[in-house]
Length: 256
Image (cartoon, rainbow, N blue to C red; front, side, top):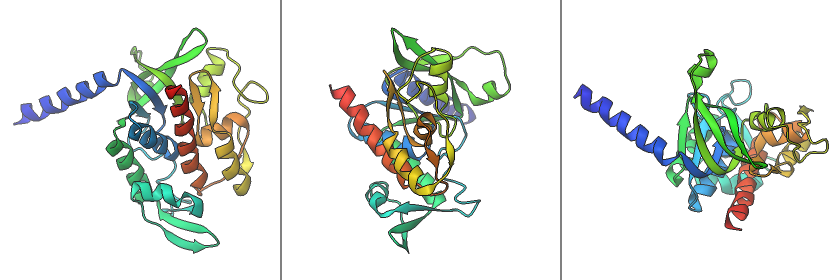
Protein backbone atom coordinates (compact mmCIF):
# COMPACT_ATOMS: atom_id res chain seq x y z
CA UNK A 1 0.00 0.00 0.00
CA UNK A 2 2.77 2.46 0.90
CA UNK A 3 4.41 2.03 -2.49
CA UNK A 4 1.09 2.43 -4.30
CA UNK A 5 0.39 5.72 -2.49
CA UNK A 6 3.79 7.15 -3.38
CA UNK A 7 3.53 5.97 -6.99
CA UNK A 8 0.08 7.53 -7.41
CA UNK A 9 1.29 10.90 -6.13
CA UNK A 10 4.43 10.91 -8.28
CA UNK A 11 2.67 9.80 -11.45
CA UNK A 12 -0.17 12.30 -11.19
CA UNK A 13 2.08 15.22 -10.27
CA UNK A 14 4.36 14.66 -13.22
CA UNK A 15 1.39 14.24 -15.53
CA UNK A 16 0.10 17.59 -14.29
CA UNK A 17 3.50 19.23 -14.67
CA UNK A 18 3.96 17.88 -18.21
CA UNK A 19 0.49 19.10 -19.16
CA UNK A 20 1.51 22.62 -18.10
CA UNK A 21 4.96 22.99 -19.66
CA UNK A 22 3.35 25.06 -22.42
CA UNK A 23 0.13 26.96 -21.69
CA UNK A 24 -1.89 29.93 -22.82
CA UNK A 25 -1.38 31.88 -19.59
CA UNK A 26 1.05 31.68 -16.70
CA UNK A 27 -0.10 33.51 -13.58
CA UNK A 28 2.55 34.25 -10.98
CA UNK A 29 1.04 34.67 -7.52
CA UNK A 30 -2.15 33.03 -6.27
CA UNK A 31 -3.57 36.10 -4.57
CA UNK A 32 -7.13 37.34 -5.09
CA UNK A 33 -6.57 39.04 -8.46
CA UNK A 34 -4.58 36.10 -9.81
CA UNK A 35 -7.16 33.54 -8.80
CA UNK A 36 -10.10 35.51 -10.20
CA UNK A 37 -8.17 35.86 -13.45
CA UNK A 38 -7.36 32.14 -13.42
CA UNK A 39 -11.03 31.30 -12.87
CA UNK A 40 -12.26 33.49 -15.73
CA UNK A 41 -9.56 32.39 -18.17
CA UNK A 42 -10.01 28.70 -17.43
CA UNK A 43 -13.78 29.07 -17.71
CA UNK A 44 -13.20 30.54 -21.16
CA UNK A 45 -11.31 27.39 -22.17
CA UNK A 46 -7.75 28.69 -21.86
CA UNK A 47 -4.97 26.62 -20.33
CA UNK A 48 -3.77 28.33 -17.15
CA UNK A 49 -0.84 27.47 -14.88
CA UNK A 50 -0.81 29.32 -11.57
CA UNK A 51 2.44 29.40 -9.58
CA UNK A 52 2.40 30.29 -5.88
CA UNK A 53 5.60 30.66 -3.89
CA UNK A 54 4.02 29.91 -0.52
CA UNK A 55 2.53 26.65 0.69
CA UNK A 56 -0.95 28.19 1.04
CA UNK A 57 -2.52 30.12 -1.87
CA UNK A 58 -4.51 33.25 -1.05
CA UNK A 59 -1.96 36.03 -0.89
CA UNK A 60 -2.76 38.68 1.71
CA UNK A 61 -6.33 37.47 2.24
CA UNK A 62 -5.71 34.96 5.03
CA UNK A 63 -4.66 37.45 7.71
CA UNK A 64 -7.65 39.77 7.32
CA UNK A 65 -7.01 43.08 9.04
CA UNK A 66 -4.22 42.69 11.61
CA UNK A 67 -5.08 38.99 12.08
CA UNK A 68 -8.80 39.71 12.55
CA UNK A 69 -9.86 37.22 9.89
CA UNK A 70 -12.44 39.42 8.18
CA UNK A 71 -11.97 41.58 5.10
CA UNK A 72 -14.18 44.15 3.39
CA UNK A 73 -15.48 44.40 -0.17
CA UNK A 74 -17.74 46.88 -1.93
CA UNK A 75 -21.21 46.18 -3.25
CA UNK A 76 -20.13 46.16 -6.88
CA UNK A 77 -17.93 43.09 -6.29
CA UNK A 78 -20.67 40.90 -4.85
CA UNK A 79 -21.25 39.21 -8.22
CA UNK A 80 -17.67 37.94 -8.16
CA UNK A 81 -18.15 36.49 -4.67
CA UNK A 82 -21.33 34.83 -5.91
CA UNK A 83 -19.40 33.23 -8.76
CA UNK A 84 -17.12 31.59 -6.21
CA UNK A 85 -19.88 30.75 -3.74
CA UNK A 86 -18.33 32.92 -1.00
CA UNK A 87 -20.61 34.35 1.67
CA UNK A 88 -20.77 37.96 2.90
CA UNK A 89 -22.61 40.18 5.37
CA UNK A 90 -23.65 43.81 4.98
CA UNK A 91 -21.66 46.33 7.01
CA UNK A 92 -23.67 49.32 5.79
CA UNK A 93 -22.73 52.14 3.44
CA UNK A 94 -22.34 49.74 0.51
CA UNK A 95 -19.67 47.69 2.27
CA UNK A 96 -19.70 43.98 3.08
CA UNK A 97 -17.58 41.82 5.36
CA UNK A 98 -16.21 38.48 4.22
CA UNK A 99 -14.56 35.79 6.33
CA UNK A 100 -10.97 35.88 5.07
CA UNK A 101 -10.43 32.14 5.46
CA UNK A 102 -13.58 31.39 3.48
CA UNK A 103 -12.53 33.90 0.80
CA UNK A 104 -9.03 32.45 0.39
CA UNK A 105 -10.35 28.89 0.34
CA UNK A 106 -13.23 29.78 -1.98
CA UNK A 107 -11.01 31.53 -4.50
CA UNK A 108 -8.57 28.62 -4.48
CA UNK A 109 -11.27 26.00 -4.95
CA UNK A 110 -13.02 28.07 -7.60
CA UNK A 111 -9.89 28.57 -9.71
CA UNK A 112 -9.03 24.85 -9.53
CA UNK A 113 -12.62 23.77 -10.20
CA UNK A 114 -12.69 26.01 -13.29
CA UNK A 115 -9.72 24.10 -14.70
CA UNK A 116 -6.64 26.13 -13.73
CA UNK A 117 -3.62 24.14 -12.54
CA UNK A 118 -2.20 25.50 -9.30
CA UNK A 119 1.37 24.70 -8.27
CA UNK A 120 2.16 25.78 -4.70
CA UNK A 121 5.63 26.04 -3.12
CA UNK A 122 7.00 26.89 -6.57
CA UNK A 123 8.89 30.14 -7.12
CA UNK A 124 9.40 32.01 -10.38
CA UNK A 125 13.03 33.05 -10.46
CA UNK A 126 13.29 34.40 -13.99
CA UNK A 127 11.39 35.08 -17.20
CA UNK A 128 11.74 33.86 -20.77
CA UNK A 129 12.51 36.81 -23.04
CA UNK A 130 12.62 36.30 -26.81
CA UNK A 131 12.44 38.77 -29.68
CA UNK A 132 11.07 41.64 -27.60
CA UNK A 133 8.38 39.64 -25.82
CA UNK A 134 7.90 37.85 -22.50
CA UNK A 135 7.21 34.23 -23.40
CA UNK A 136 7.28 32.18 -20.21
CA UNK A 137 8.77 31.75 -16.76
CA UNK A 138 11.64 29.95 -15.05
CA UNK A 139 10.57 27.94 -12.01
CA UNK A 140 12.16 26.22 -9.05
CA UNK A 141 11.06 24.83 -5.71
CA UNK A 142 10.64 27.56 -3.10
CA UNK A 143 12.82 25.70 -0.54
CA UNK A 144 15.60 25.54 -3.15
CA UNK A 145 15.49 29.30 -3.76
CA UNK A 146 15.24 30.16 -0.07
CA UNK A 147 18.19 27.95 0.83
CA UNK A 148 20.13 29.39 -2.13
CA UNK A 149 20.96 25.90 -3.34
CA UNK A 150 22.71 25.73 -6.70
CA UNK A 151 19.98 23.76 -8.48
CA UNK A 152 19.10 24.55 -12.07
CA UNK A 153 15.44 25.39 -12.75
CA UNK A 154 12.84 24.32 -15.32
CA UNK A 155 10.99 26.45 -17.87
CA UNK A 156 7.28 26.85 -18.56
CA UNK A 157 6.37 28.53 -21.85
CA UNK A 158 3.25 30.64 -22.33
CA UNK A 159 1.58 33.08 -24.66
CA UNK A 160 1.00 35.53 -21.79
CA UNK A 161 2.44 36.02 -18.30
CA UNK A 162 0.46 37.77 -15.55
CA UNK A 163 2.33 39.39 -12.68
CA UNK A 164 0.11 38.88 -9.65
CA UNK A 165 2.95 38.91 -7.13
CA UNK A 166 1.49 41.71 -5.02
CA UNK A 167 3.44 44.61 -3.58
CA UNK A 168 6.90 43.70 -4.99
CA UNK A 169 5.69 43.20 -8.62
CA UNK A 170 8.49 40.69 -9.01
CA UNK A 171 7.94 39.76 -12.65
CA UNK A 172 7.88 43.37 -13.78
CA UNK A 173 11.05 43.89 -11.77
CA UNK A 174 12.73 41.00 -13.59
CA UNK A 175 11.65 42.43 -16.94
CA UNK A 176 13.04 45.88 -16.22
CA UNK A 177 16.22 44.74 -14.48
CA UNK A 178 17.30 41.67 -16.43
CA UNK A 179 15.73 42.28 -19.85
CA UNK A 180 16.28 46.04 -19.60
CA UNK A 181 12.90 46.87 -21.10
CA UNK A 182 10.79 50.00 -20.72
CA UNK A 183 7.35 49.14 -19.40
CA UNK A 184 4.09 51.04 -19.89
CA UNK A 185 4.35 53.60 -17.09
CA UNK A 186 4.95 57.34 -17.00
CA UNK A 187 8.66 56.74 -16.45
CA UNK A 188 9.14 53.48 -18.32
CA UNK A 189 10.16 51.90 -15.01
CA UNK A 190 8.48 50.60 -11.86
CA UNK A 191 7.17 53.70 -10.08
CA UNK A 192 6.65 52.17 -6.64
CA UNK A 193 3.71 51.92 -4.29
CA UNK A 194 2.47 55.03 -2.49
CA UNK A 195 1.21 55.12 1.13
CA UNK A 196 -2.31 54.35 2.33
CA UNK A 197 -5.29 56.04 0.70
CA UNK A 198 -8.14 53.56 0.52
CA UNK A 199 -10.45 55.25 -2.00
CA UNK A 200 -7.66 56.12 -4.42
CA UNK A 201 -5.98 52.75 -4.01
CA UNK A 202 -9.16 50.83 -4.80
CA UNK A 203 -9.70 52.84 -7.98
CA UNK A 204 -6.09 52.77 -9.16
CA UNK A 205 -5.78 49.01 -8.61
CA UNK A 206 -8.31 48.51 -11.38
CA UNK A 207 -7.14 51.41 -13.55
CA UNK A 208 -3.51 50.24 -13.44
CA UNK A 209 -4.43 46.69 -14.43
CA UNK A 210 -3.22 46.33 -18.01
CA UNK A 211 -0.55 45.02 -20.33
CA UNK A 212 2.74 46.63 -19.35
CA UNK A 213 4.92 45.00 -22.01
CA UNK A 214 4.29 42.58 -24.88
CA UNK A 215 3.35 39.28 -23.26
CA UNK A 216 3.30 40.72 -19.73
CA UNK A 217 0.31 41.97 -17.73
CA UNK A 218 0.04 43.18 -14.14
CA UNK A 219 -2.91 42.93 -11.77
CA UNK A 220 -3.76 43.64 -8.14
CA UNK A 221 -1.12 45.29 -5.98
CA UNK A 222 1.54 44.40 -8.54
CA UNK A 223 -0.24 46.73 -10.97
CA UNK A 224 -0.39 49.45 -8.34
CA UNK A 225 3.30 49.12 -7.51
CA UNK A 226 4.25 49.21 -11.19
CA UNK A 227 2.27 52.39 -11.85
CA UNK A 228 2.65 54.19 -8.53
CA UNK A 229 -0.79 53.70 -6.98
CA UNK A 230 -1.73 54.02 -3.32
CA UNK A 231 -2.15 51.01 -1.01
CA UNK A 232 -5.55 50.26 0.48
CA UNK A 233 -5.22 47.68 3.26
CA UNK A 234 -7.78 44.94 4.02
CA UNK A 235 -10.42 45.95 1.47
CA UNK A 236 -10.37 43.61 -1.52
CA UNK A 237 -12.99 44.78 -3.99
CA UNK A 238 -10.42 46.38 -6.25
CA UNK A 239 -8.31 43.24 -6.20
CA UNK A 240 -11.23 41.08 -7.30
CA UNK A 241 -12.23 43.52 -10.04
CA UNK A 242 -8.62 43.75 -11.17
CA UNK A 243 -8.55 39.97 -11.72
CA UNK A 244 -11.74 40.10 -13.74
CA UNK A 245 -10.49 43.03 -15.83
CA UNK A 246 -7.13 41.47 -16.65
CA UNK A 247 -8.77 38.21 -17.65
CA UNK A 248 -10.88 40.13 -20.15
CA UNK A 249 -7.84 41.94 -21.54
CA UNK A 250 -5.89 38.72 -21.91
CA UNK A 251 -8.80 36.98 -23.60
CA UNK A 252 -9.03 39.84 -26.12
CA UNK A 253 -5.36 39.36 -26.99
CA UNK A 254 -5.58 35.58 -27.24
CA UNK A 255 -8.70 35.70 -29.40
CA UNK A 256 -7.26 38.34 -31.73
